[in-house]
Length: 96
Image (cartoon, rainbow, N blue to C red):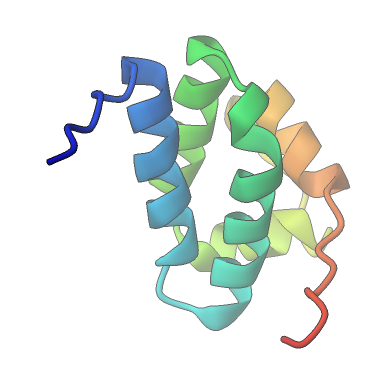
C-alpha cells in the first residue's frame, strides 16, 4: 500500500492551471496556452500564477488576437506573464 504525499499548495495550483490551459475550448488556444503553461508555470511564483490565472479567465478570441498581434494588449492585461505569453513560440511535439 502506498500513500501519496500531498502536493504543496503552489504545485497543486500549477497543476490545476495547466489542466485549465489544455482545456480552453478551442484547439488553437489549447495548444498555445497548454504548451505555455507546461513550459512556464513550473517556475512561476504566487504572483505570476495570479497573473496567469487572470489571463485564463479571459475569452479565447481576445487572447488569440493579442497573442498573434492582431490587436494590441490592453493596458490592464499588459502584465509580465502576458508579455511572456506573447513572446512564447509554440512548437509542435514530434509525432503530434
